[in-house]
Amino acid sequence: MTEYFINKRMNIDAMDLLKGLDDKSIDVILTDPPYDFSRGYKDDVLHKEFTRVCKGIIIVFAPPENQWVLPADQYGFWIKPISTKNTVKSYSRFVEMIFFYGRNKWNCDRHWSQYTNVFTDLVDDTAVHPFRKPPSLIERLILNHSDEGDLILDPFAGSFVVADICEKLHRNYICGDMK
Image (cartoon, rainbow, N blue to C red; front, top):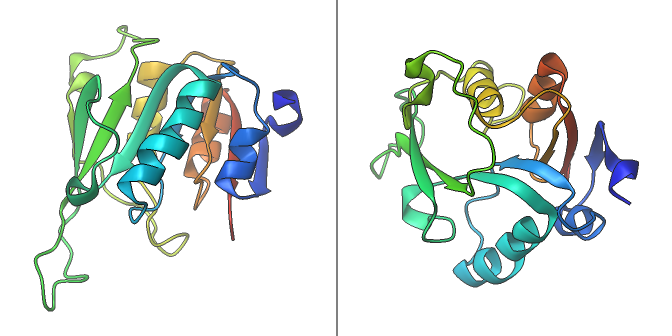
């Protein structure tokens, strides 16, 4: 069933997409889910589906105040560009966490500076999607953890930046989001 979804950008609910995928059919999951999921839903539903379909590494963005499933195998931090957005009555969040589960591939033929766990990449265009991740960061993660031809899943695609980078880097992808 997985083959049906390859290299398509779909308007589909994440759970419907995940349920349509075969066990251990995905090399990399790289995703930025909504940050308001309950702990139980993340732990008992989504992450279980992620581990069912992924044979490689799972990479998930999450805010420090509502972290993904603990413990992770590795942690990364994206230092976001400073902005006055949402700072009227509270402190702004300038850091997002990146949770890594599994250690499938590690492409170590790149410069050492590509392997720090603190990323400072700049957002390129929030007009495309308000929560868009920097293409340079997504590219680095894909290069570090996959090879050409690998299959990468983003069930919460938003701006479809993962699909864009997969096309550029000759990776297969499955990306979906509710519009």
